[in-house]
Image (cartoon, rainbow over all chains, first blue to last red):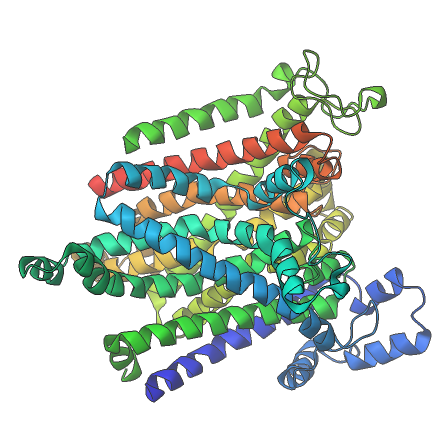
Length: 327
Length: 290
């Protein structure tokens, strides 16, 4: 296991380097100096501040030197200061991260909780009524513009029926509530955003679960289990599901970029002060340090998620860690 | 049953193509005509799908929006297929360092949430830069003519969406080429002295086209979804040019009062993307049976 972990970590290095090249490239392909944008959007930035900024980014030096300097600061988790309010970028991200992670973790759980049963039930009778119904659902789910679904739900549940709040993460009188009440209040506000975020990946995930389960149910050991007279439930869950779940974990890891990217849209629509909304605001204000930092952080989060998924897979299936670790 | 669905998808797309081409003749009103006294009218005989906050006819705007969506979808995917074939062919054929470098780039682009990159690039206002190309000494006239015909924001959208979605095709092509390049017919061509370019272009790539076609068909739907998200966020097709996404953006302001502004553009997106997905899956099944 250790050698597998080690080889996986080594494999991340080239990807990390590409990420930094891309983030750096975006900022430096921009027309004009990056500091122009700060001046243009904030006339209060003084001359000294501009000079400090230019010095900070080493704009008088050749590009490769600038890149190496930026990389050096990056390795100390120093992303510079925001053009908008001159606060450290890292501080701005750290205060916005928890709410985004909360939404994404809950929607991941929701996806797993729904996609697994959907996939298993369709796989038990491929071509049956349930399977055909979920196929229709999957096609529509794939094609649905999620931001439109969010708008419709907002209009229906928020504006027309007034069942759910339409924006923000808590009510105005949040501070006066007790702990449990506060918790419920937040959950109440996040119900729609979490459901919408889950819906995006649900269609694909239930399809993967189905095909993985169909594949497993065709194996000889399933026939053996049935032949020796095990009850069907035991065959399905102990012998079938445990094996079918493995590849789905990897796919779940691969769907992370969509989930994190989706928070830009969901948080903008529902006015949630998370990382996605910070990104949107930074983009609209051309706050390059924040944009670069979030591109990097988003990619690193995805990589870590994939790594976790792969490690989980390797932990559960010895064939993986032996096969790859010794290569 | 699946074939039947693919036919439904194909026919829907044909209808959409006809609507896009015939837009000037079938649109009941001028899509750009501002008519403030008629603002935010619900659907009626005069305005079958109602009007927007500036009193423009929503149906006419949707009809013209079909043009934009299909145009961006097809050209973006064209760019993605070109880049993907090129990268996949080089990586698969030459292997070694080129392969390692290119495939790590693919891994990286797949691990960065694509909406982040799209927004970050569009935030730099590449359309401004493109417009400046019109002032270049020799070829400037060419660019100026192009931007006269197509809004530079739309050129940017097509290019950026295309350049952010070639990775799947590259992986497909690379895998096909890896499995094909040791086959007898390729070795025979190689022995006969075919150049690498000829090997790739006439022997390897044509054999990889099946899966690429499937991926491209599904990709057009994806590109249309991406365009609508960007336009919804105000960073895609710029008003007054109508696009399904920016009509939704205008609808958001009036979400509580003018439901028709939100319902109809979304249905257009859903139906179009669904049609591409049905057709793509149909082609995949058909190829699988061959």
